[in-house]
Length: 132
Image 1 (cartoon, rainbow, N blue to C red):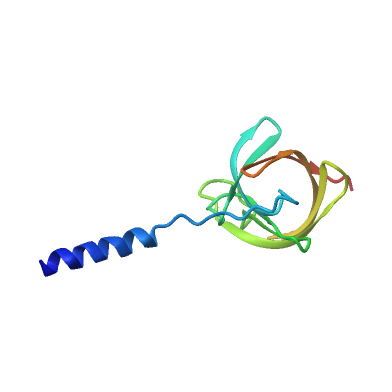
Image 2 (image 1 turned 60 degrees about the horizontal axis):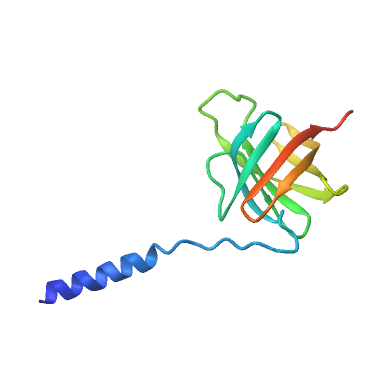
């Protein structure tokens, strides 16, 4: 009888620890949060909202205009790819363009993200390089 009680209590504790973390979404700015690459469709990258980065390319847009970009940790793009997090900034240029300036393994780069759509679950955007 005592073993059954211990088993039931252990199972209850285990199940309560497996609770899925709820992702916070700011309804006033759907861009804020963590986005991981889901797929590439022609020139568009599709991202899924997440509570944490996965071992893939992604962004975390923060409300203070800073961001973290998860990208290749070195110059080589041949698998297996190692990812690292790099700090940067973002600002709104117009209704669809976001300018990003971010550090990377070779220095600093700036580019635009052309936002095609964003909702509580998905972000669709195309990278637009700045002319130098």
